[in-house]
Length: 309
Image 1: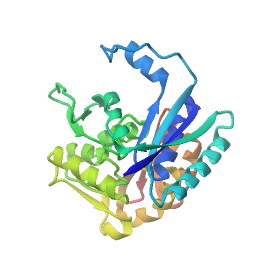
Image 2 (image 1 turned 180 degrees about the vertical axis):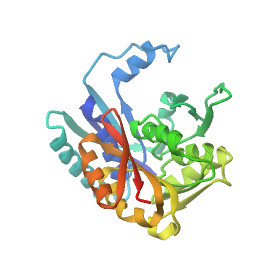
Image 3 (image 1 turned 120 degrees about the horizontal axis):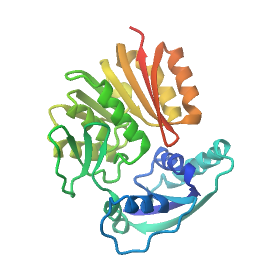
Image 4 (image 1 turned 120 degrees about the vertical axis):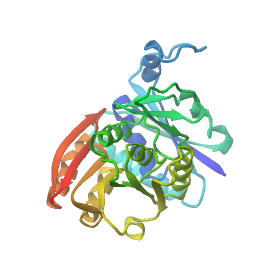
């Protein structure tokens, strides 16, 4: 299959929001080229060997996304452009420039792997690419991950926020729903922490990648991955619901929490920029959920809310 490469040059403060827009529009893979992050990573000693000149410091970064060049491409591009215009309402001073280019599948499908390294998130969880070596400590829980073209490597602030929250709230033996599972990283993290997990995604590609990652981590008996909408695949109630999506979708999903979240159960909602935090919290309160905690990282939040018992 051929792909359309879209590159948005943006002020660094907006790159995470731009990346989220790519995924919302149906993007099958995103790379963030931030020269400052690369420089910081090398200067911190996390990359011992490199044979290129350090990049210049800049307040601009590039978000590169890939879309299948199929009959849905025009609709996805329209959605992305609409989202970028709306983003300017929240960040009126940022710089945005969009360009597109046709590419072949083999040109990008594996190049990003050079930048995906093992990383520890929270107290115990380590996300390790399947092709990398890692010497784990006795307390660490290691996730073997190949995200392929599905969202979720742990490098995104929302994924990291969710993993840290899962470490706090997951109880062994309890049922967890992971909505919009992407690569399956959050479902796997919850399972390693002792939960039984049902993961859902509407994207068949994400479902395939998530199932492969569950198998690599030998968690097939603890994690089930389904394709489809919530009403189609979830008929019981969970002790914990985690939804790392975007604010607008989380607000829509709030109506389903009475059905899919047990009384007294906890919802972890992320993929939410700080400017939309109040909108999500207001909807949760209207649905009888109490806001217990909010954590923020790089302009994104995870909201921990409990359903009234």
